[in-house]
Image (tube, rainbow, N blue to C red; front, side, top):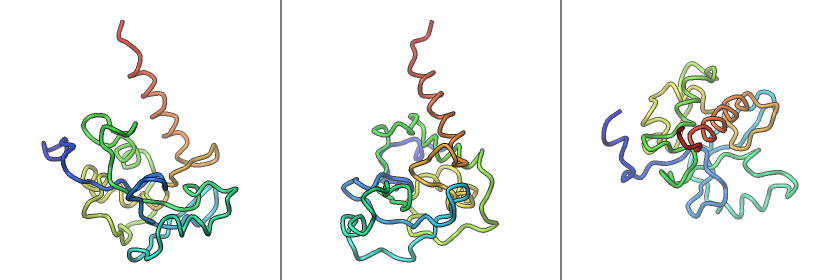
Length: 158
């Protein structure tokens, strides 16, 4: 990995950001089923603010379960950042099966941290990523693995 990628100074975009970030933008809509979700990406910037988009969502549904947002990467302020890059993007590229043979159109690819660090292989899997996962999601094993890794790295060495 180059020093540029290790640096926190570049403004990367996170393709799986929370909806409440100050610069959050709608990236896509989650379709499919809970067992096999598929994100359909918006083809251009949506003119509506995130608040306007969220105002159309049933309040009993977590927005990040049915919508994908992007925002500026928080680097070291994010639990997924391991000091060298995004663990989540790396795990998705290595552990998830591709959803397609070609990368889908994407509004943030030029600034996407996952793409910068993992290349187009992560793009082939990105449409299967739902920000909020449940026990029935394919990502649950990855989420559990990351959680276990966080707990292991947080424990002091003997």
